[in-house]
Length: 232
Length: 232
DNA sequence: AACATTTTGTGACAGAAATCACGTTCATTT
DNA sequence: AAATGAACGTGATTTCTGTCACAAAATGTT
Image (cartoon, each protein chain N blue to C red):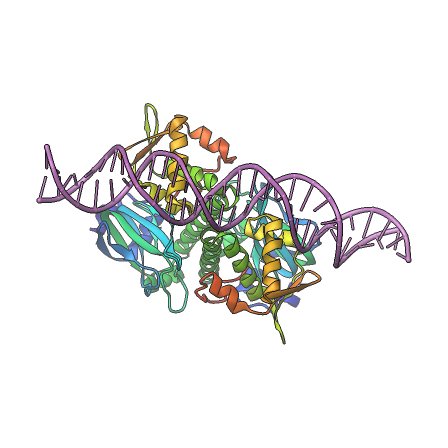
């Protein structure tokens, strides 16, 4: 079972996957893990999609990542005493994930410095990604947050069409609002303007971006490499 | 020279410091590194204080960290091709820093999995810290951002006094505004209210927090461990 | 096809925050 | 002690966002 997936993976992920205990099916609507639960495993998504989010006390949800095959989730609990997940991982598309026991993984790092090295690289990229994402949210207002989110979605889930880039994940206005830390209505209004100006179009919850450069220009995008500017 | 500092360091930092090339003096007002510069070294602060920030195109500054002895800065450039600093490191208090060549460090990780392991732990904590910080900024409005910043400053630089916790770093309203991604005037107004309600008092740019619990209650602080809830 | 449920668009309004303007306070230098 | 410049406080105004309300549209279900 693991073998089936291993062949498609990069060398590094393959190494990581060797520590995998088992493959778990993931089902739309359920949670891979929830905030506050004891954290025993991290996961490599093999197929399907998982949304990582955090709630605050008022019940507002802030979405942080939208993960697909080959993304690592549940990673933020390594090397802590009494490890607990600090996010929710909601499954939004069926698939499978490889579960890696955290204690085993820590052992594996000790024995295999190459593995630790690769993971270090991954963490490095991940934190860099996170910080640039939040900078967009904090410094450029709500419009900046939305445009940045759209750009990242294009980089992660974009499919090239004749008329632009199609974001191949169905997204409601509320979903986008959760990524931006904003109100649904605000997103709706901003999207309306973008549509009127032919920057985007939307059909059946699928957004197509016709003028990505416009979005980038508006938020002074530095055209950072695609590895950092995504939503994974 | 290195020996002088090494004795005060934790085992992990000590190991890291073995890779140190040299000690550099850091002088108030100058920069340890700037955004866009080629990144060849990371630094362990030995004494003095360094502020990590990022500019946007309009010239607004977002401050991310305020670092002191034993903090690691310049870390976000590991294992990348053509590594460049993505932040500014402005020195706000004189001191010394140990410079660690990044290429050497990467080699050291290969040879010493214990070292890589410790660094992994550090990265893990660091990213966790970063995300909780930004969540406060994004989800709880500007008041949430300020209160969160004050709480973190207490945890990092707080000194217990008879009448509360003194934040032992001089901070202007503009400094605080930069940490919150907000306008100087907004911070000024919020601080005025806090002073009127005897939550804080300010004297010569030094803030004393008399009622930390009030601040925590207002932003539904989860009382997360101090290792995560700081400004380092 | 009919119905129920989600999702969306939009106006109206309230509240939050940024910006502008300017006088005051504070710290430092000469 | 006077002078200078930086930092602060605050009113007035404008802009941006969130909230509420509700109808229209889209989607899913039987």
